[in-house]
Each structure stands twice: as structure tokens, then as C-alpha cells.
Length: 346
Image (cartoon, rainbow, N blue to C red):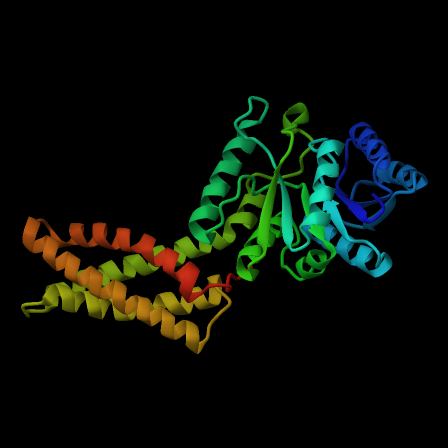
């Protein structure tokens, strides 16, 4: 396939596995680009040998990360090969078969407005536990926080049309988080995703992977961690203010009044924090929608807590925590889909 580029970012590769993989790729694809992402100097001869096979090698003098490598590859291809119609990114550790890459290439040509993902079956016995559970956790986080139902959020086998290559070059992220930000971007911009089932291959329990479970997971999940921490701190502030005001007021509808006064303060705090740390969209429009949501949630909370307190006659703080926890879930979905839609801070 002369109109599709294969992009392979790599760091200190297993030379035998990678060479075998590239030689097999060469039988079907003319254009192959390898990004040497700051590999040790002992690999210089290996990359020089790849160039002898008519493979383009882009070199990072130091390790800059997978995300930077992919963006540099896109930039190089778009500048030097204007006739190219798309590319496939794949890993160098033997996880992807040439048969699946050929299948992905066809999908790119037939779905130029979609991001193509090669998705694995994580229920197979050969999947290492950290990969199985890591993907399932990320998959559920994406469904809850982003509203994207994706089978394999961490796949390195991805297909891009020329149009998407250009769009995705401007996405933030230098390392593994770039691939996560890429998925979030599709949600923001209304880009559809097409999933293609591929073989689930793990060689030596994925021992060749350079993914750092702690460091790289923090980078990937930081958006979700920021949202959770800001929401939880707002929740605590609201509960503390509610209890304090409730103890001061001596009016009949003091539960509703305490709810309103506490929510006014906590909502201002929540909006400022979310607008600056989690979302990019701080505007009059988002402010109007945010406070419309605040008023609705506040009234529902106040009325339900009052009703349940009179009905059950149990400590009001217990009812308040239960009701507001359930409303938090609704609040999350509405903020994601209505208030700050298209505004995730990557």
C-alpha cells in the first residue's frame, strides 16, 4: 500500500522482534517511519541497518516521549509526502500483526473522518494482569467522565486519515497521555471512532513495554483526578457550610435555607477551580449554564433532604450526604455534556 505510512515509535527496542516485524511489514507497505525516541547509543547500528532497508528513521537525541514521537512523525510525513492518504501507528514490541495492520489501512481509506482503533480482547488468558485490569479501569473512567464507550483505550494500533493527522498534531501531551488526550479530543470535536477487532498478542508478558505503571498512569489519569479532587473538595465545603449554617438558623425552613446559602459559596469555589484546572471553557455562556444547573440541583437537594428528614426522622447530615452523592453523579453528566462540553483541559 503506497498511500499509507506506517509509524513505529520505539525506545531501546528488542532488535530481533522489531527487525522481524519490519521485514514482514515491508512485504505489504512501502512507507515505514521509525521514531528512535532517545534509545541508548548501543542501538545506533541497529537503526542504521534499518535505514539500509529503506526505512525512514527520525531520531530524538534524548527521550521525548511517545506522544512527541508520533506528532513529529505526522509533521514529517505531511511536509514531505503530500500524496499520502493516511497512516497507521503501531508498537515495536511485537503486539501487532501485519494482517491486522493491513486491515486497519483499508479502514482508514474507507473512513477518512473517523479515528480507527485496533482493539484487543482483554479477557483472553494470555493478557498480563496489569494490562487486563489497567484497561478495564481506564475504560470505565472514560465512560463515566468523558462519555466515551471504548473497548481498548490504551491500544497503540491506530489509524488516521491525512485530515486527522493534521488535526491531532495540535493535541497536547508528550508521552503516553497523548494517546488519552487524543480520545478526549474526538469527543470534543465530534469525531467518530471505529473499532476494529485485532489479535491479542503479548510476548514475554509484555516485558518489552516501557510503560511505567505509576508515573505514566498519573499522567494519563490527571484530568480525572483533578475533576474528582475539585468535586470532592467542593462537596466537603458544602457539607461543612450546611452543618454550620443549620446550627445558626432558627427559621422553619432552615434545611432549605442552609442548603441554598452553602451551595452559593461552594458553587463559586467549584466553578472557579473547574474553569481553571479541569476545563478550558470559562465564558459567560458556560457561567449561565453552570448556575442554571446549580439552582436546579440546589432546589432538588433542599426539597428532598427536607422531605426525607420529615419522613424518616434520622440525622439530617446522613440524608444530606446520601442525596447529594446521588445528585453528584447527575451533576457530573450534565456538566460534561452541557455546561463544559468541548472544554476539557488536556
